[in-house]
Image (tube, rainbow, N blue to C red):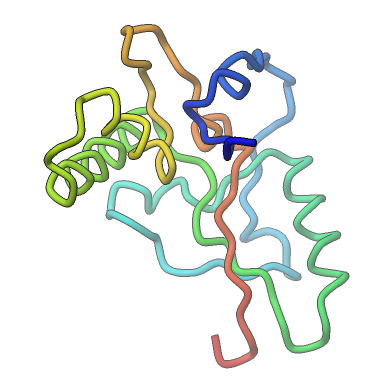
Length: 144
């Protein structure tokens, strides 16, 4: 079976619908840690925001970890502009590492790490981070 990526047809076929689950700042949850803003300064104002239901899931996951080990949010919500910036930067790195790839192959390779805001055919894509429903986390100890 092929490994699914954000560009896989099975993933692209999943509809994205507004669920009215509010965005919340994990800084208000004392049982979760958050790190310095990742990737680029443009993420700093928003990276700690996730959907409320995601926060509850993160808190549950934290409760299952051994004492002294913590989830640290690396990145939650991203604006469309930041998502596009990160996609463009990763695509440039992919093309530099593998110049023999076609544009379509470079797109697929890029989406292994960063979701695109637009598909190769020009149609709109809704990356999970843009919805506040995706999180990147790290496991850290008391020393970080």
